[in-house]
Image 1 (cartoon, protein in one colour):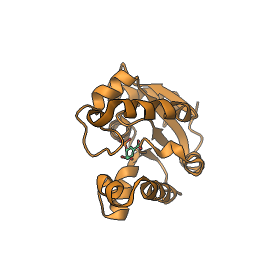
Image 2 (cartoon, rainbow, N blue to C red):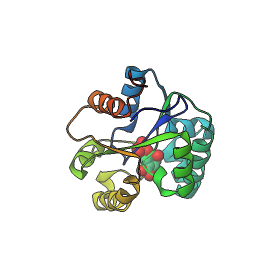
Image 3 (cartoon, rainbow, N blue to C red):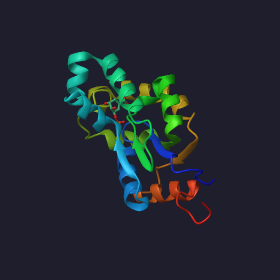
Image 4 (cartoon, helix red, strand yellow):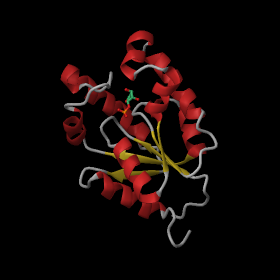
Length: 178
Ligand code: S3P
């Protein structure tokens, strides 16, 4: 598939620990795309960390900030957007993501995610040490939503650079045929 225009950004979705930010950095490095990290954007706009937002205002407020931050990206060009794992929960977010570009799901097995999340910090909904069954149940509930992406890329067997190269090949971004 050929990237039809400069406006077609790459939007990465996937569960916490799927490697959205890491693969985003590789796409930035390999293809010269601008990396926009949605969580970082929320933190910048709100002037507070994500755990702070969850603790003080709750998840519903965080979701509103997430939608606002996503919508503020309209007009972005030649960028890769690394979203947060819960962005797939709202229909309006899907509409905003599809307007931005091609939505790519970074898929990983539960074993991989659990391992990657084991020593992660700063994720109010993704601390397996707190309650691993709850995190797994969230993953199970979200899987059908992630599957609505335009493109699904398996990430279990390759490092972030390999995954990024595969995405670029599949999209032929900047490729000779574009
Ligand atoms: C969340 C994922 C986080 C962050 C917030 C909520 C989620 O982003 O947006 O803690 O609901 O899955 P990462 O997927 O980058 O960890």
